[in-house]
Each structure stands twice: as structure tokens, then as C-alpha cells.
Length: 334
Image (spheres, helix red, strand yellow):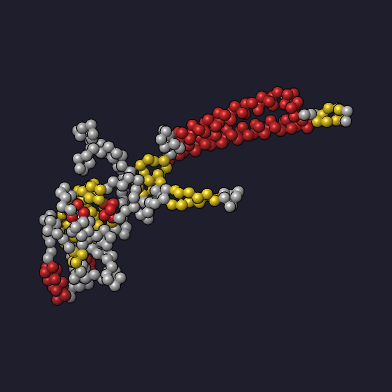
């Protein structure tokens, strides 16, 4: 498709022709002249202009005014395809009013004020262009990027959707595999961040103590946190349930042993010069060796129990050593 730029004269002629015919209502997608800002384009840009504030621009990296982006500093290897609908839709005029711009207002496309925009650049700094909060890794400078911005964005697959980072699985690309758009090695696994509210700074949290209402512990907590891996979490919970069952059994056995000992002590007495007296506790433990043995076994199980808990922590909760760490190292959310 050959891209064509519509001049101001052609637009004015179209509007005057529509006024003469009275066909101004725009019903059934018929022509509807609108007064919208005049976009500023540069000599390097080829523009296909629609009739209702929509544009396809092929040029060099330029998110805003001509001086912006890699094209603004005269860089090469920074081609761009820009799909724009509603230029300056949210631009505020000098009186503080919105949506009042006319064809006499010359504006540049901007991520801040354009209604909808799909921006494809060979080399840019897309996070800075869009005013995005910092993620786990802030490495958008000098990278190729595709950006979509609008009030609402929907992705709908009839079968499934994949969001993937890292190198593609291709053959014949050598030991380093697929490289970055600049030709550099792609050696770092990328991250995926789901950021609601465009805010990732740490936040203050307060922990309350149910037993002591005056005990309030304040600390800093990361707003952007790793997502949990479901299967690893299930494995951890299964182990914790087993530990709870084991602990419950041990408590039950100890309770029975203590009950037997109490009954034995309560039911035994001997005659002294001052009358019948109960048996001393030390004597009871010596006289009933089974009770003493039971206590020794429970103590041994307690040692093993604590060691198992430490191993569980290492297996699931230590980011550096856990083989089944419950958190993702690459997917984050607020």
C-alpha cells in the first residue's frame, strides 16, 4: 500500500464539499468532517492520514516533539511505525479545558495526550516515553519495543495466550542462539511485571498483635512482589500438613503419658508417721520406667521434627538454595 499524505488544502476542500451536499450527519459511517488539531510531522516521516484524526506514520524514533527520541538526537537504526487514533484527545488548553483544540492548533503526537497509540520502534526508551514505574529490571534504553496505549486494551485468544520472555527456540543461530535487535547476546532471562496503578515504590505496613493491641510492628514491604508457583506451594502445604499431623500425634502421646502418670501418682500412697502421703514425683518416674522411656522418645522426635522444618525452609523458602522455591524469580505483580 502506497502511503499518502492529505494536505490541509485537500481537507478543507473535502469539508466544503460536504457542507454543500448537506451530508454532514456521518450516519452509517458516511463522511463526517471534524475539527481536530493539525499534527506536526517531519521531513523524514511518510504519513497516511485518515479523515477523522487517525494516522499511520513511518519515520524514525520520535515519541513526542521533533527533538524527542533517538531520531531527535540524529541517531540511525531507529526506524518507527506509529499508529495513532485521536491525536491531542486529552490535551488541555490555556484555560484548563480539555478537547477544545481546533485545526489551528499544531501539535505533536504524545503518549500523554493521544487517545490510542500503537508504537513500534527499532530503538528507543519505551519506559521513559510512556512514563512507566520502575520494574525489577529497568533496561528499556536503546531497545527495540512495541508499545500499546489506550483507555482500554484487550487481548482475546479463542484458544490460549502466551506471554514469553527470553530467546526463541530456533535452529542454525549458533551457540548463543537468538540475539537482541542490536546484535548483542541475549544472556539474561527477561522478567514479566503486572503493575496496577503504575506504582512500584515500597510501602509501609503495620502488623498487629492479637494478644497485645499496643504491639504494632512497622516495616517496609515491596509493592512489586513475585508471583507464587502453584505446584511448589501445594507441595509445601502438603509437607506442613504432615508436620502438623506429626506434631498433633506427639502432643496426644505426651498427653496420654502425663495422664497415666497423674493417675498413678494420685492412686498411690504410703504410710508415714504422720499418716498416708502421696508418692514423690521422682519416685514415680523411677517406678514406672515406661513413662520415662516415652518421654525420651518424644524428645528424640522433637529434634528430628525441628531438623525437618529447617530442611523445608531450605527447599521452599530460601531463594538462593531452594530447589522448589515457591515464588517466581521472573514474574512479578503489585
